[in-house]
Length: 313
Length: 276
Image (cartoon, rainbow over all chains, first blue to last red):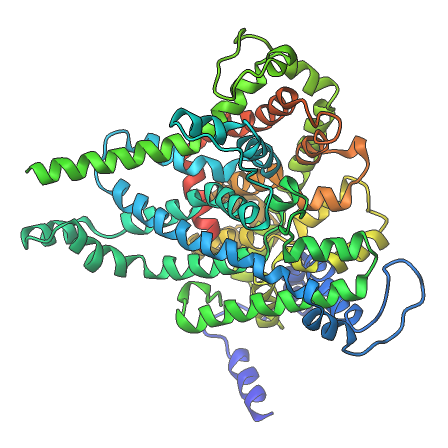
């Protein structure tokens, strides 16, 4: 209480000589002005981000079907179902494929970023080629790779050029299908990681390399002692984005297989529960679980890397 | 010396291999899109060249029967309105937060900050009910409002930029009698051009490519955007890879043109958007 009065008292004392105290009307007007700028953004933010979160929490404790006016409070039953029904929880294992793919993706992106940060011929061409897939429409990518993995499609044709003849149905078994889909996700997202790493590497001052070269350091030592520490913040960010990305995969498997042959992911399952089977309550509980996991991962990242850029005020 | 040459050759080899992996699936789809139904039936291999490289028959089919024309129109409308709205909302929020002190400012900033952590895919179950209760379900408004209302990244980008504009500019304008809106409109907004360009590019590409939101909120066929219209090819053309390929190429082509002409802005934009 004393704190606030003190603060108010300080604010009243003008720091700079002001001609005359502003009239009451101007003062109220000045107080209202920022809200006039913020009213639309805040209304949208609350309606489409915060209200859904609150509602979702509420739905998750009910058996609502999303349509009927009646709903019953069921306590934590939905949560119990999410964690104990094997077919509901199983989809988390599919994320493992995408997680493994992210690891491959990060290593490849690091390699290409390092290589292309040095002077290489056709550097801009390679940079563009590696990045472009990230910009392509997800449905188009899905179709491109459906043809790629088809019987007698691109992959089989290329393999037969090398004398490998296979009638393996790439999307036919769960393990093979998930690996193929995770591969597509590497193809699609590698470019973003690569460009982020490249930007971080290029912001390292060039003299450092020159000094290292004078000291006789090879490429590997340059990478280890100059590049690796320089990109640590971006690397952590990328790891976190990959983890939450792997947990919320939707487009590629939904478009290519529709979640068939064991490729169903958590988000596909939630969408199906909510919009196909009208189990809004259960779907909400599942979404709350996913949201909590992702927030937890982000929280861990913020603890690991205190990021001053996030500090806005 | 020879070791260096070998390692350099290996590096180039890896780059060429990566280029092949990226481009091959795309090139094959381009080739397929130029083949006729007969060629496809005669088991022309995936890597074979089309008989007539100027056979645009499949493109016509995709464009007319696949409803790509209305899809491009719908996408263009959504794109214009939502990107314009995002720019306005983002710059206004950034201006208000950076240039004014007001009560609950900390709370407002915290609200925007925390929202950035919530991935949109997780909350759609409940967002759907809200959109539906406004009567916006199955109309172009649903994606427009959702794209405008849930973009925190662009607010970040604008905020970084507003900060770099010296306050003395505002003050001298205020001495000349300008009010807050005139300052925003005549001084701040024009100086935000680079940030606006970044937001327009990043947001534009994101909206153009989005599948999830139009798929959930606009099931009507005549409300198809390019993603959902292309997705619907899967049914009627299931066995006609030449038409599906043409559709995919039609969708990818604008992206390629934008990428080639705005390369540098695009790299910077996505870097700023991701590292915010």
